[in-house]
Length: 472
Ligand code: BYC
Ligand code: FE
Ligand code: FE
Image (tube, rainbow, N blue to C red):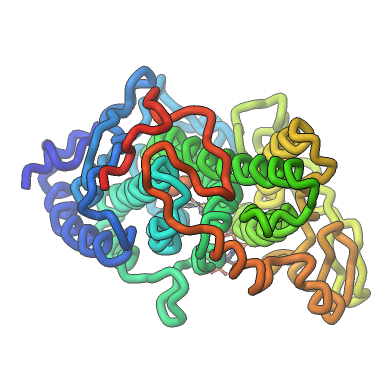
């Protein structure tokens, strides 16, 4: 195999025979994983995909027909403008690292493995969706997301192979061995083991879980370990498309529901094949809450160490208007906790550095609010009086302080029994899921869209809506 060609890269692979050999050994195992755990259908069809070919801001991607197993999963690091120096934590002003310092090796490896593990996890979760795609256009977007998540796995495997020796190679192997949802060898983070059974799940996942990706990658892009910073910075350019797929997918679903409500003068759009807004709300409640869990504990010594050591910053760390205290040594983060002994919510302060997970999460929540506001604009345009609401940060949590009690979507403390009694109002029920499945059947004719979703505003890369994005 000619890896100069097969793995597009800007890391000078051909001059690094040792790394090349390691990747050569990993590649067939990766392909085996892709064939076994990637999309269940259309692996041999030609798909109009974007492939990263450089890091030029003007043209980093080409669009062309590719069979997925022949996709060129490349390795790209964003360019560095000048000599970087550490801009947060305990070592402000020191030079950044081109290699892994021994004292931070384990922490860095752990961050990279955790990040890397989510990528194949998401591909596994989404593997059956092509069977119920609402259009040729949407099917292509799904595959685009899938091949890019697989490229993100490559990005992390590149770091493991290049900088972590035998340990790193072992970790890269294990990435292909864990399986989403497997009771014995699950993916590392909770949400990557939850099933994604239908397109409403998928759009919510791409809106909320990929957005966790945006914030985690953003915080790793601040890292003093320059190769990690550069690779995550490039991943963020692809991430924007995943968020687009999620947010516009939900927007189109919501628009269609609102139109059916208006046409038929009924909130219940089931007789007309639409997805009722309350079902959409319950799916949002689910995926938003489980995605909040991905930020870890509000009070975290791991997070404090990552920050102190310059491994992981805040989102947009360099913006000193946002974060005037670069060391974050002073001051406290004020937050609400659930006090188990007293059985009530209490106000607390924790030292700023220990609150890095909560600070990142709060930035994420603001971003999520903006997406909801855009969907509610659509409801307004379509003369619908109903609105989507982002649930409280306390609702339906497993990780962190709010995981220790039950809260309704407005954030009110309720008993576990009350939560269970009202579960069907809060979260997707079996009947909701069955209904959603019953309307989501496959549509593949170019330019045609399933009845439950409205068409997008534009095609892909200037192509028309009725372009044959997936050649069937
Ligand atoms: N599930 O001190 P704490 C993406 C563990 S998404 C299971 O609060 P920390 C993508 C935690 O590991 C972005 N375990 O944790 C999206 C720790 O374990 P140990 C993914 C959890 O380390 C869509 C213990 O609980 N990237 O890219 O501060 C499609 C104590 O917790 C969970 C990253 O996450 C959980 N939800 O924070 C495709 C970046 N939460 O020490 C891709 C890398 C916590 O007891 N990861 N734990 O063994 C990190 O920065 C951190 O590990 C976390 C956790 C933010 C995840
Ligand atoms: Fe990713
Ligand atoms: Fe993504």
